[in-house]
Length: 106
View 1 (cartoon, rainbow, N blue to C red):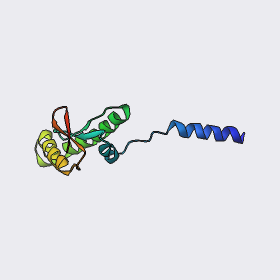
View 2: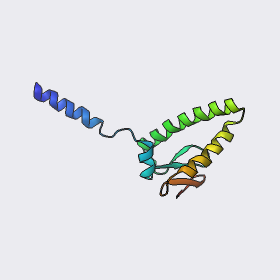
View 3: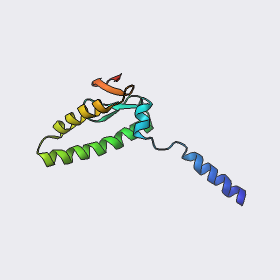
View 4: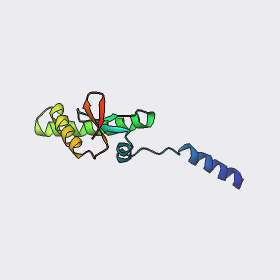
């Protein structure tokens, strides 16, 4: 019984071997980059990368909406300012979007 329990624990642990991707690690690996619209983009799409991009962008969109409402401006105005700031803060060697869908290393 103990052996079966140990085997089940190992199998369970193996099923979660791919952990949720960290944003900074994904940027450093060149998997994601900052887009000109203020949102994160997938440089090298995969299911895991796309899930991370979706999660980050949902949070950003909510924050942009909150700021737009607070300052009585459009979400697009907020996201444009956020894009400039995010791109300026992007580290050398990480990706930024130079034009829609075109990625370059900073």
